[in-house]
Image 1: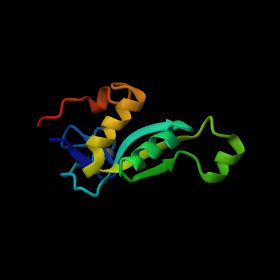
Image 2 (image 1 turned 90 degrees about the horizontal axis):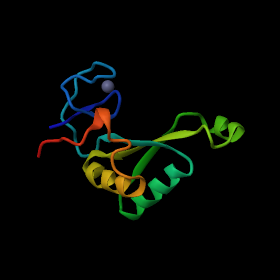
Image 3 (image 1 turned 60 degrees about the horizontal axis):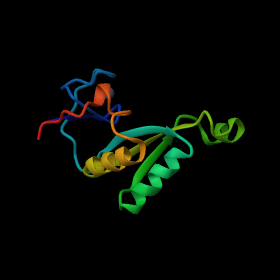
Length: 114
Ligand SMILES: [Zn+2]
């Protein structure tokens, strides 16, 4: 079973997070888990579809709001988070929108044990 890193807000495969080396813990339903990082307008689209499915999402831009307006949207990547209880459904939605595999390769390989 995957654990949750509170610091990185990601699911991790090991007991220790590969990015920050903190101990993971068991995920709780309301934990905010990283789903994907996307630029506009894809992050808008993703969040819209999630909302239609009844999944609240959180977004954190890599740049501040002021920067977004001056630089424009091209450089602005947004990280999208969902609560752990919605993660599986959100990933399905993400895959159906953007295709499976792209964001799930590597660290987030699809080999969770049921
Ligand atoms: Zn971490």
